[in-house]
Amino acid sequence: MKNLGDSLLVEINFDYETNCMQLDSLFDDVFFVKLETTEESLIGRISQILFTRDRIIVVDQDIAKNILVFDRSGKFLNSVGSIGQGPEEYTAIQHVALTPDSTMIAVKSYTQEIKLYTLDGKFVKNLKMKYNNYVFEFLSEQIIVLENSSGGNQIDENNPGYRPRLLVSDMSGQILYSAFQSYYKKSFTYTTTFPIQKYGQKVFYNPPYTDTVFCLTPEGIYSQYVFNMKGVVPPVMDENMTDKELKNFLNRYYYFNGEFIDLENSVYVRFWAARNPWGQFVLYSKKQEKAFCCNSSFSDPIFFFYDTPNTRYEDNYLVTNRYAYDIMNMQEDVYRWANTQSEEKRKPIEVLYKDLTEDDNPVLFFFRVNI
Image (cartoon, rainbow, N blue to C red; front, side, top):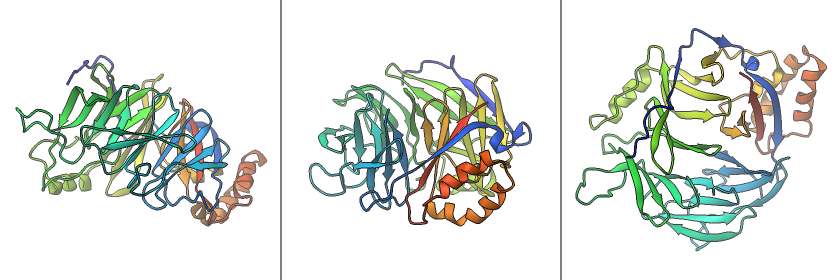
């Protein structure tokens, strides 16, 4: 591994007893997009959301098993590929990414191929990967990051015990560097869903259940963020770790499972705990160099629909989605609250509920962080 050092490391220190703020005090703008519902655009559960300059790409990995493209107003445009065994089809949707220029959609299924499609859904070509991977991202047109959470990859026949989870290679399979030994075995299978994340032009990696997020570059890797939560020491992830031991830890403490979003002016971090199924989140202000916790209270009724964000939009928006049937089930409570507020705060609620039914597609909500 080419370690570029820790000169850019940001330590984010916090506890949940100080700097706790009302939810709607952390944001200064909210808007939503209703995704058009047609027979061709049905969404069961959103697993990824991607953005280009003028399109929204929604991935449903598990239920509808489709990739759908909408314009920025939510109008359905087209689907991308389909499930099948043909040369232009994917057998499953494991992970989706955009090419560096955002002109093509890359789809990984349970093979060593990545299929490329245009934004209009037309098949372009297959990229055959030399090494197994579950999640991937592009560092450039010619350099790709591959992550294999199930046993890593053996890359040196002279050192069979070294099986790194993370590989950075060119498109021919020539390894530029590798990192993070895999400790996967029969007694230890735990991992996280998306250890690789891309925000803006930066690609990040979090070794599962550790407190550090690394930034990956073509030249090497460096520590970008370390999260220090008062009273919590992360588990030691080594060859001695087992599922039983990690489960015991996760049942006792708050833990970081890789859910973070790097914004232009702040960093969103979410911690989970068995005793708190909703978890807790922190927003770190890069300008103030200070972390703010949230006490979940709010006065603006639009914040009824705040939920764990999926990704980032533009520079400083967090994006979340809510199922239409959840929104409809909340209608009575939302209107009761909204009717005590100003017309300015009631208006978005009226627009949201207009013509919405419980069978419609999810609604995307955009919250701009203002700390």
